[in-house]
Length: 255
Image 1 (cartoon, helix red, strand yellow):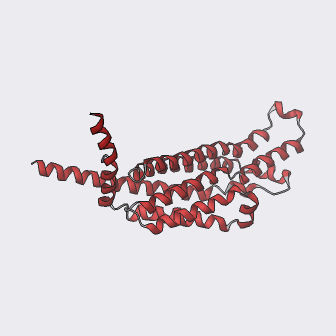
Image 2 (cartoon, rainbow, N blue to C red; image 1 turned 180 degrees about the vertical axis):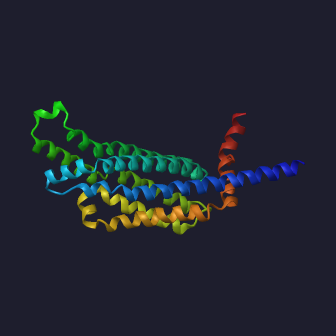
Image 3 (cartoon, rainbow, N blue to C red; image 1 turned 120 degrees about the horizontal axis):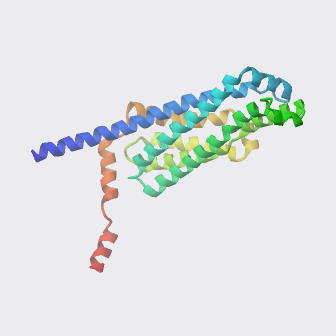
């Protein structure tokens, strides 16, 4: 009876781990799909032509709102992925897993705040009475400036670059995910980190996006299809939970 209870508990734990891994893959996939749609509002920008851009904005208000909502959805998906991967890699290194989660959450927060720049043109061009002190040309120029800033805001990508580097390293140290996925995630991190230096990022664009899509896409696909090696994850978790010889000696000496 006790043995059957133990077996059922182990099976439940394995099913829970596989479910968490595949759930991370599902939300990662949602993030990638919604991230592609983030570029849609940028099609409204006519570079160097504030009046034409303003006309596009006012003619496509639902598209602007769609871009804003899509950004929030992508951010929410990435937060879920961050939480699940933190738990997944905690047995490998709790400190590095926590640091990775920190970089990701900061990037998500900055990205969510930056999404407000997408809505700012609707306010500027809204025709409110208090805006009458400005000339139409000035308001159109400010609206274009907000959209240009949103298109060039790359700070979140830098944080995600550090996140991907750390996750790649954690995968390499783990034994429950393929090392090649860790290598690809590390390359993805390097691709995102090109945005630390905007002139370099602009020169490499759009090719510097490819490593990120490849690396994070590979991790997403593996989590969705294969999940993790449950036995090896449990071995790492047991090893992480076991007290080290040094701590045991210190406890004995203190007694």
